[in-house]
Length: 454
Image 1 (cartoon, helix red, strand yellow):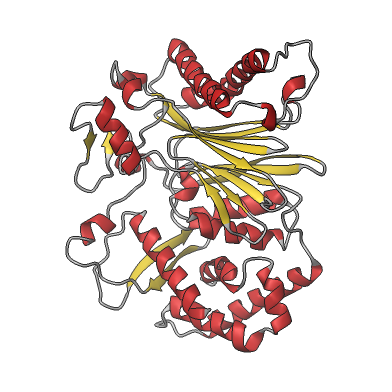
Image 2 (cartoon, rainbow, N blue to C red):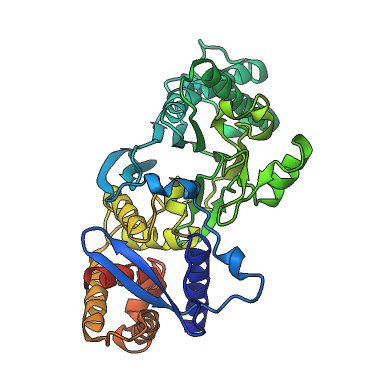
């Protein structure tokens, strides 16, 4: 079990290194990555990383951030005030939105949420969206206000034709009544209609990406354009569904671009990420000024995923987030952190705000926006888990207080994790921890404690 967790750690470390512009002096044993807490200073975590083989080094050190060429425009100190929005449908779902400007000079993210559509046919459906803007605010704001309107228009037209339901009908529509092919077609049309409407009114050079979900009683639909992402997580913390990022290095997007654009449309400068006509994503709303035929190359064409709800496939929670989150954390790690925190607190905004702070400490330089949507099958806080969480934090702080300055911090975590499993915790306590993802899910507490120990 320890070996398996160590392998997971190594993968997370490698993933993190690939996602940032890290240029260390390679050492056969270790290198150092600074995680900065803007209120506490910085801490150096000595992380063992294997030296890349010839030909891999340059690839592993390439940054993947969308705005890598604009880092000189970042603030010298981040804006850490958070915006929260929360609500619930009792017995159905509850959610919290958290947003933070971070290191960016402007907040270019937007959001949209409808717990219930104001329409009899779709009154049992909920809608959530995150819009990550770039080169200005207008595109994200416009799409946030209008996408769901076009979706509703298209869905109403569909049920009128397919089911014979007009505006006078009060019958709610179920997923099982829909023709899935027609459903996908009208959703895609709604995205195109929104993009066309944006072209007529936009006055800046902005664009945006979007990740959305439609939640019904039988089905959940995920729609994605660009590099924001959604994950759906089971009660045991497993990522059951994830959307794909639309980037120039994705094989599917490369093939699509080869069919619609001239050769050389994907470019890459030294030290920068791959781009399509200067964009770091391959599907967007807006960005009309780039070229006359830009929508043939980077359309607002959503990839749609259908998830069937059932007792055999329970859903604990859903996360929608922009790449300011995903740049510094993996799907699996975020799922474990949320699962762990849900066993400690029932306040979703406390959890979402913790995630934003965690991502800032880990080096995110982008705006950050995140929806956390919890279902009844998700865990709830218990006194026993809260007390155990407190004890583990005390163990961690005590261990760090005794560490030698030259000690490898990652080695401390691995040894501490082994102590938890063999000496410090009983079998019953370990079983209780499994409700929150196990010992490995406590790693975020360790990183936080290292930062706060300065």
